[in-house]
Figure: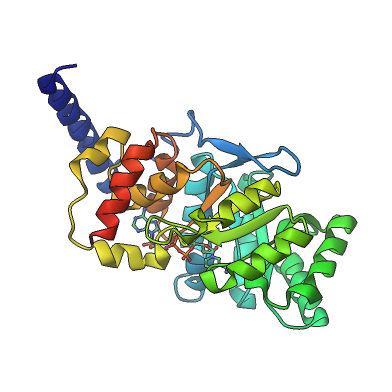
Length: 311
Ligand SMILES: NC(=O)c1ccc[n+]([C@@H]2O[C@H](COP(=O)([O-])OP(=O)(O)OC[C@H]3O[C@@H](n4cnc5c(N)ncnc54)[C@H](OP(=O)(O)O)[C@@H]3O)[C@@H](O)[C@H]2O)c1
C-alpha cells in the first residue's frame, strides 16, 4: 500500500468512526443494534462457562435510586442485556436501594440473562453472614452467581464462609476484590495458598501496576480476572478533558476516550471481564460496543501509553 493509499484509508476509517460516533452521541443508535453480533465472551477457568467481556459496575446507578427512582437502573440493565452483556457487579450498602435493584433484576425480561455478584465488606463472621443473607433476600436470589470479599476485608474470617456457601449452592463462584496497589502483596499471598474462582483488581491505561505481576499470577493460578476502575471512577475523563483523541486511534475503531482505555485493557488476553460503572444507558452501549471492534496491537498499545503518560 502506498503512503497515499494509507492516508486515504486512514481518512476513511476516521470518517466512518466519526459518523458512527455522531450517531451514537446523538442518541440515534438504537439499543440492541449490536445484539446480533453479541459481545465477545471469555471462559471462567474453573468451569469453562463463558462470560461477556464487558460488565456493569452498578454502584453509581444503584446509589442514585433514592433520588431518581428505579428507571435509570432499568435502562442500564436493558442496555446491558440487549447488547449481549450479563455481569452485574453489586456492593450492598443501602437496604432500600438494594431492594429496588432486586425488584428490577427480578423482572421477567431478565430471567436467566444476568450474572449477579455481591460482596461482603463487614468485619466479623456473623456480620459477614448477615450481610450475605440480606443480599440473598433483597436480590430475591437464593443463589448468587459470585460472592466476593470486598478489598480483602477480614479475609481469613470470611473465606471459610464463602467456601461453605459454595458447597451449599448459595454461591456458584467465590472470590476476592482489590482496587489499590497497597493490597496487591496480600492478594498474591492469598492466591499462593487458596484457589478462588474469581479475583477482581483495578487496571486501566492510567493504572497499569497489575501488568507487572498480578495479572499473570492470577491467570497462572487458573482464576477468572475481573477488572475494576477502567476509568478511575471518572477521574480519567477529568484528566483528559478537552484533549483530542489521537487520529490514529481510528485504526482500531476507537472513537472515544472511554473506548481508548477499554480497548487498551481488553487487548490483554489474561483477563476475563471489565466492569464499567455507569448510570447512562448510552454509555453502557458505548462500552459494550467497544469489545466488538479490533483491539490495538503491541505497537499501538505502546503509543497509547505514551499519549496517556504525556497528559
Ligand atoms: N474494591 C472493590 O471491590 C471495588 C473498588 C472499585 C470499583 N469496583 C467495581 O468496579 C466498578 C467500576 O469501577 P469504578 O467504580 O472505579 O468506575 P469506572 O467504571 O472506572 O468509572 C465510572 C465513571 O465513568 C463514567 N463512564 C462510564 N462509561 C462511560 C463512557 N462510555 N463515557 C463517558 N463516561 C463514562 C461514569 O459516568 P456515567 O454514569 O455518566 O456514565 C462514571 O462516572 C464499580 O462499579 C464496582 O463494581 C470494585
